[in-house]
Length: 296
Image (cartoon, rainbow, N blue to C red; front, top):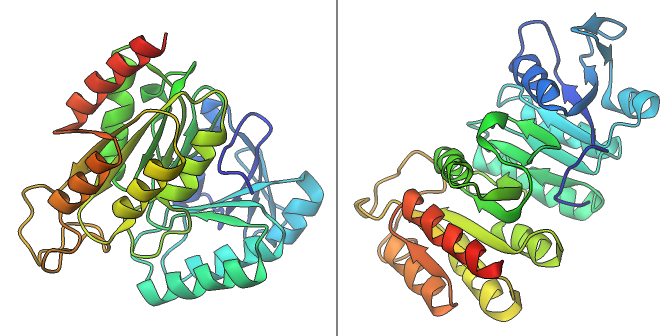
């Protein structure tokens, strides 16, 4: 149930059809080097689409191909059942990029995974996915903005800022190990703390960038973990500094109520934990480049 993916990761695309988002992004992932071994569609079992064999169920795809990760880009109404189907088939890593999944459905699926399928990890919904630079890409991140060779890991709630941070690091010649977009919905399948723990344990990752945003307390939880468990340097950026209280800013989880969830509160918590908090993504990359130089 690792967060990380690599060349050994075998991906099944759920809901595959000639016109699906999954096919479009899956082909881009395959071009990057990801081993896309199967697709699923109950109406197209037995077909082959763009050299990808299609099976009626995820269980059949896993049995026939050994798939150990799934990529879900189906409409919101179908996403919860697709996630559960993958878990029932024993898929250990499930990436769901679907937007607009109702929070109550996310909570139900999250609880079901924790209770009934502890061997399966969900990334998302409403996330850009994951990229292991030079090895594997599952989701919608453009592979050409990542630079292999490490030593920086990234974890982000914001997809857009995630892409910018990857690009900024690459432009400075600072390689990445793994970039994880956890998404900005209220009930993400994978949290900041999950990713930070994985990066702390990963010998190839020497430093981490955390990209947060207003709303919720995920960044405060991350700060607590960093203060008590992290030995590696962490740089952060919090999006939404100028957001007015009570205003929802794009993501379903990015809403501020009173003093809770404000950028200022998150910046304060991270700073207390010893994190260098940048004012913008460019500055975050500049700071991280300096951190990497000192590590060398």
